[in-house]
Length: 300
Ligand SMILES: CC(C)(COP(=O)(O)OP(=O)(O)OC[C@H]1O[C@@H](n2cnc3c(N)ncnc32)[C@H](O)[C@@H]1OP(=O)(O)O)[C@@H](O)C(=O)NCCC(=O)NCCS
Image (cartoon, rainbow, N blue to C red):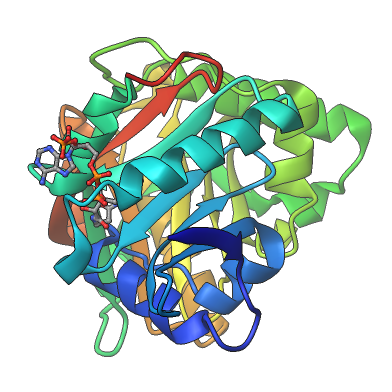
């Protein structure tokens, strides 16, 4: 068995099939992963590719082993290789995404990855999506004096970056979670959520009461689909259908940009957001965990 760098052409099919088989939706595109992450393949002495591992510059890790070669120690081999690489990058944390009750979860448990988010996937098929119910909520919110603008309307100034960051951070702290979660640093937020070409500023909607920013939603335009990020409304403004109004704007933005499907996920205990997504028509998918560990913990 040897571990070697992925080949950008020859290895794509096997990497894609391993993602397709076991990754919680939306399934990554192998070509993008190979381009943007460090991917290494496990190959037998006969030249058969039997697994791979991918590590992203921000500490995302994923491992896939061919179904007929599992429990032979290949996952462990590529995990150790990935952990060494992560340490060499100086990453403080590695995170992965594993389906509930899966081999991936058992495997990650074995390597001291601890769950920090327990979530359920949702998807909205836009083929025959009917906007009328949510559009009504938007009109009602507007009649009650709430305005909606995009982040692009305000402009990407340092002041607005801080404003959005603080709103998102405040909203994120109110998500019902098993375990409190630290919000990302300001610089990371700007880099990942505001200077990321799949997250256009026209797809960030802000709800306003006068000049106050009181709610937001954000959606991406990925290749072939959209991913719905944060939707949130400050506690004092809840129960007035503002989240549904924001959702109608982000969904409309995805439609306008010819996306046919929107993915999102919710923490399993986040009943209010799950209810909003159900009203919007999002169907429930598989449950999964986000898990994490420090790269430097010794493997057992
Ligand atoms: C998870 C996966 C990569 C494991 O690959 P593998 O080559 O079978 O793993 P290994 O043989 O090296 O297993 C290492 C240890 O993990 C644990 N483990 C692996 N699969 C397990 C399973 N199905 N049930 C319970 N424990 C398991 C065991 O402790 C195992 O050691 P042991 O066989 O000595 O008991 C493989 O099942 C897979 O490709 N699953 C789909 C992809 C996935 O979920 N990846 C997420 C992980 S990042």
